[in-house]
Image (tube, rainbow, N blue to C red):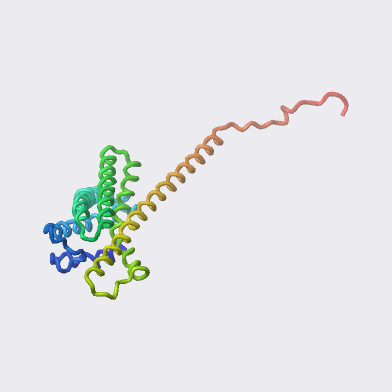
Length: 235
């Protein structure tokens, strides 16, 4: 999904041509387009490197590569993309619903990533993994938002037949607003469910291991024939 998203979305912004942007530029904020392009480029780094970060084989076989890609994810991906997302989202021309969603996602993305980096520096590896799973979920919301938009356009929110600019603008606001919120809410809910289930499985395995250890340590007493009481009197 990430590869398809990047192939379909990234090339138009590598031309640095505002006319090819999917986002209409607000007339009162001329920096919106260059900040949007920077946000997309840093977001691309975040998407690519976070996929490397959650690859178990790479993390176990090449921990040095994992550390380098993790720093790239934090400092050349999520943090600058999230900070720029605050500005780009707050000045989005796509309506209040979209602006609120973009700002909220950017805040959560920054919080999760900073917490993940701090816990890694403190060598709290279990906490680090949990925070980075949440950061990964926030990153994956970016391509998932586009999937929701395509699904909505193909089903319940088709493009209007009218060429009236006001109608077209209202449709775009409705489409992107309804696609953006469920995109990141879905990924974060899945991440929290996965973390909860993983924790429950780990606790279950730990309890089972303790029971086995306790059973193995308990001495087994057997009664030998010589220790049996003898009966007195005639048999």
